[in-house]
Image 1: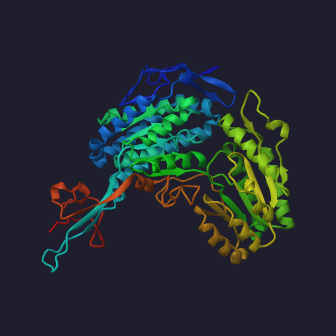
Image 2: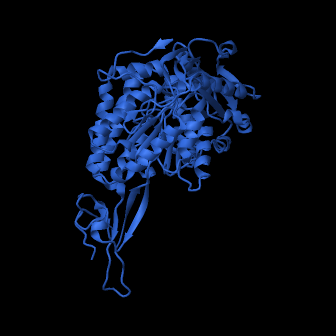
Length: 553
């Protein structure tokens, strides 16, 4: 059994393998039958220490602590919440090499990828801190009253207010950026919503290290202890912990990144409550790519190189990995696909995050391969698909199929979470558009086109725009930039809330609701709407942007 380093964190703290509530780890009752270990997918060995999933009582205690903290935390000045986010970023950085080595042990991901993801996580926290200070996220709108008018016009002021405690579920494929201190947690804390985080069972040691960093930041900033709690998830209680968390009446919204089945199940639980709450779930995405003839003629080699790298990066376990490639039948297309297949095979096998993900991938490949008319042009030897002790490996796969077969078989249109892509060969642009019409909602869509493709480009663009959250030209969809203009969402099942984004400062909106104040005394208004504009933020006053004071009368 592989042991994580026994070097203590911050000089004196060892991993406990337990949940943390109200700023401290809980030494409550545990059952040996519920205990579990994380797996090193690079070696196939279990990792010490033993982890203990949260009990029913611990879930309830974490939710109550968040509820108790909400009043004070939501009322803190934006500058204090911004400082909290910046402090979390610093605390995560200061874990240092221990964090990197722990993530590598639990995920099989490479050091360069992990360092980049850690830096992206810190950048997200700092961008959200800037957004909190700026104040525009509150969308303050003032329509001044006219008491002398007949009939009088009431003074009306509106802004976004935090919903309440948010339950966040960690993702398997991004152990930092979509985990304990990732975008969901950071954006919820930014607006004043306490967070109850349920860790992912694939990387509990990583989650505990980062949870300690978040708790240290909360304490260091003098904020209520219930501002953040961490619940261990995994083992036989994995579903029970998640279900109890979503159903708890103290929880007012949920953030989830994971499978379609998981997102749908949580959404149903939330909808079946006596007081239904919103779930913001990022789920499956096939990320279609269209290669038009002019682009293949001009960029064949560059496109094959870029797409092969994008498909196989991190063993294909990225939510924006290209999963389908549409192109017109031609000699140039055949040559392009042969080049792409060779480059994918040259990338070699990669490490999958878990045995479960590998098992699911093998099953999907075999169902797709069974469809009549599917040709494997970069293939995975069937003997290698069987589960064996040792490293959890997967090999790149490229399938080729006519558009008619693609339209007929749903197994070709589902997400392959791994280094797999389906090339759909179309007889005409009309044939291509019919095939694209069968593509499910996705985070991204990519078009490779040249000036000579203009007529087809417009038709494809219109079709893709209806099915994706982000449309890319002559590039690849992997490498999500954290920025205000970014949309990381899309039509179902990419997201169950296509109006939202899980990345960038606009992610803040998910945890808020608009509240309107009519003829409200100034001292009872939130600072963002008070007459003197004490926050000195930009507000929309009678339809015009202004930072000036705005008397209520």
